[in-house]
Image (cartoon, rainbow, N blue to C red):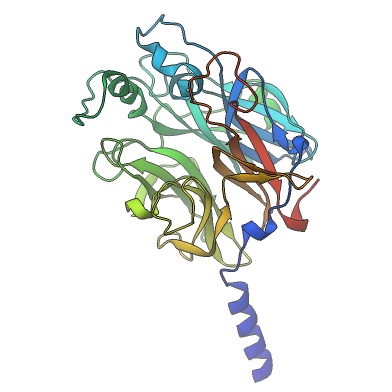
Length: 384
């Protein structure tokens, strides 16, 4: 009897170990694993398998080119890639396989410019989840606040104007029953945001929302903020009784400059009995992973106290193709991890570009300066 107890005890401990290694699970990719649009920048993908067996992707997109000066004489600051801050929309695509190819269907959320709405302009950072019988699509948006003042003497006129849009970013959610109903415009959307900056803890912005269900039935929302005057990125955790809130700020996660991250994707691993989050590392200190902009893995047993995972590096900014060729990337961001019902990773999606998309090319954007979404299937768990 004692032997059985000891065996079960050590089996439990082994199951709770922090031994997830996404870097070892990432394989080579080919062109069929990439989703690109010749007329739009693509970013922020989030994928879920539907009851129809298909894979449903929500993603950010905004058009190439110059912006009209119709509603703002300084709209030129949003030309090209920088247009995400005002012109991004949340689009929807479908595929028969997790890795694609994905086919664009329609735009789901787009700002209408109504000055009375908190989500007046950009629609960005989509993340789809299913809790119970409903789907929830979390997103961010912004408006324009002419009263915002920025005291940094290094900020020029264009940057100060940019921040009057950027520093109004808040988090929202829509709720829907099925993809067919969503495509008909049937969804509920609270009039107020789920989370907004408080200038005390969450500072200038609240963005990058990611939500998961806790073992006790409550919900965690991990999100990003930023210290004033474009300081380092910070993570915060909020707790709610329902997936559509209200959420209450619970704890700081990473707020120091050397551990600064953004773009979290949060989930609970039932096998390892711990929370994980994939994120983009936003520091040159190399304390978490060895490269600025690399994808990193962080972990927590309770969702409140976080640290680097035992295997913190998910991926450097690079792709390995099926032919063995390695491609260095300017960006590999917005990681989204698809898991099974037990929180075991199946695939990693990310936004990528080979060359810098904000390098000044706004017309006739080349594929190398364009952005795309890439799917990394993870080990043998991937579902081709």
